[in-house]
Image (tube, rainbow, N blue to C red; front, side, top):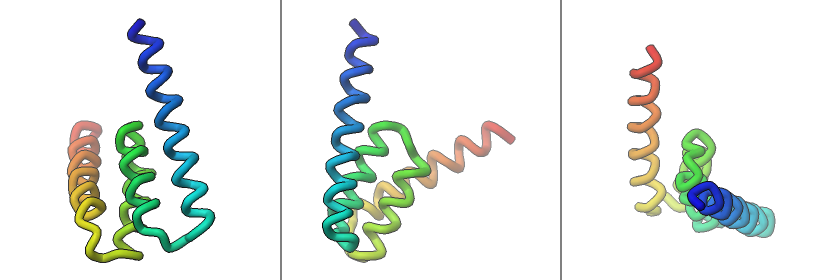
Length: 86
């Protein structure tokens, strides 16, 4: 049962990411699409990938608080991860 839920969640998150990829293809400067894709990647625990999305969102909309907050969280997570592997 738990395996099935994880499998369904992964499939759902991949669909979300595909959707936001299409939105970005249609408008390369759509900050909201980068932000939303970043959140989906965050939910997938793909931290380095989503950091790139949030940086793009901030590049196109410097007032994007969501992207700024997630960037801080991810950088902290990545720094902690690096600490444990040193």
